[in-house]
Amino acid sequence: MQKLKKFYQMFKKKPKIEVFVRSCFFSPVSNGKKRPPYFSREICYQNLLHTIQNESRVRLTFFLDTFFEKEKDHFLQKEKNYPVIEIKEGTEGGSFVKMLDYVLQLPLAKDTLVYFLEDDYLHRPGWVEVLQEGFDLNCSDYVSLYDHRDKYFSSSYKTLTSRIYHTKSCHWRTTPSTTNTYAMRFGTLLRDEAIHRQFSKDRKVSQDHEKFIVLGLKGATLITPLPGWSTHMEPDFESPCVDWQEVLSKTVLLEQKL
Image (cartoon, rainbow, N blue to C red; front, side, top):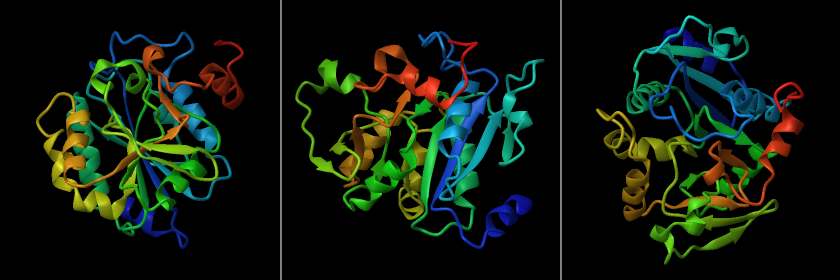
């Protein structure tokens, strides 16, 4: 841990956005989920790297859960430019808490943007600027780049109302909840630490919806862009109004995969 802390302290100009990505060899939570035909976690990883090329505001840290380690090597074990922290948890909730423990010990400024990211998300180029714009609004405690498709068809949201904002790149809406992929200022994470722990600790799967409902009741605001600048890789729930296969083809060399 001390060696990794020095890694964060060695930069004279610290990044504005610290991204913490959780990955694994096998996920019981994701096993059996419907996926696009071009999906793989390595493709999401390649897309992420491509969309932060020449982006000095961003630094990545990866967490690799090796609990269900397979004989085949994981692509993250070849990563040379960013830290890869291996953990053994075996549950989504456990890996989230392990990541949370790590992040909260880092010497980050309170205004640093912290982005918790799961390994099955795709991003549009320009997402870094858009994420920054979301916090520049000064009305948001939490920002997700994922425009949840279920908010438009699920009966649970039949009476959903939202405040609408805009920045240079897009419109934004307030929304009651998101997945366990979202961003906040480090100071906000410190403030809400107990709630983030409550809905993941000793759970196989984090209760992300319930977590954000409680955060909302305590006055925290969550916003998402219209249209989305990221998507969860589930066809039935992809962010609408974006051709995500086209995004992928423009950010990753996929001629042999598509």
